[in-house]
Image (spheres, rainbow, N blue to C red):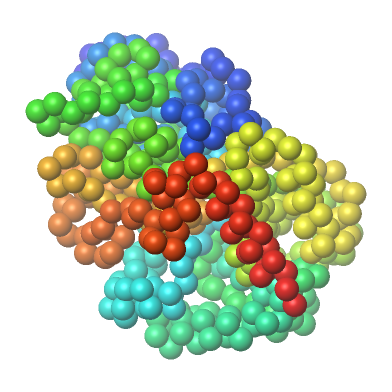
Length: 480
């Protein structure tokens, strides 16, 4: 640790940088050039129950030279810093626009699943072929083991046991049965099919459940405690984390990246981008229109009584999702609250409207009628980074530039962000040639011809196209 870093640490040890601006409920990454500066956290259950945020290194206050700058201090940015230090002896400088772990990492559902994007294994085979699909499956299994090892010494309220994938309509069961056979026979992954009676008797009394597929891997975690644990671990390994330091300008000259922040310019030899659903189109040319940010809503009830838990048939704390395209994700929390989430508004301006919270509450009532009228203690929304082909990328988009990114998890980033951080560290350390799977060897794609409504040329109609798709998905999800 150099003298300047030691001095800054001495000034900030034991304290988190306080918010200098209020939470912005209408923030929209397709509208705003940056996600703000020094904004407070969204009022999520995770932030409300995680305790005081741990110490950070304060905002950037003068020009500095660093080996590696990481943009974004969420799960991916912090795990990248952890693995750079642990495996390669590189002490990263992490830049955060607002408060530490302010974005996706404290607004998700806390479900760590054995997945790296939105596609199923059968879709991997259709798109990439059998060899690559088997490799992607091994990558996810390795990612789960990496995640388990990483959180072993972090008190993040883990709820292990697997993932229950609930068929919300009877017509979905043959699809689940086919996928389960593929998982068992081809991927040697012990997925089990459960009929509706078994689901309700032994797992969950979801009134919509027509059966389910159970996967052996899946862990529920407390997202706020996990993010704060990553922050402590990264700083203990020598990384510095600087909130209230948005990148407001970026130039590259003679192989050095000049990242302009309000307090000074960070001159970096390599840059990792880990900004998730809060990625601005103006951050870097390699990212413009490569992601479609989508809003997701979550609510958390007051603690349920034993009678309410019994009435809802909540017999597991495992993570649960249903089979809608506009899926619901839910579980019984360690403190006996029910958390449930699903898709939300189209735009940031619309997100605060009560209709979206009410729609999710009514979805909860439909699944669990005994909870009609139960008090909602927490309600929030956040942006999800969805790539145009529904798969993430951990990649160096231009081999002539030392710029790397890990983005596009599509709502499955709680677990895979840790593995992505590990792979991004590998790229930054010059070991990217060892990575051969499609998510490592190709850029985040532009939309294909069928998706032109969200392409750069048709950017003004992007949200119109999303509204149309949501209506179609909702119609298709709810048909008998």
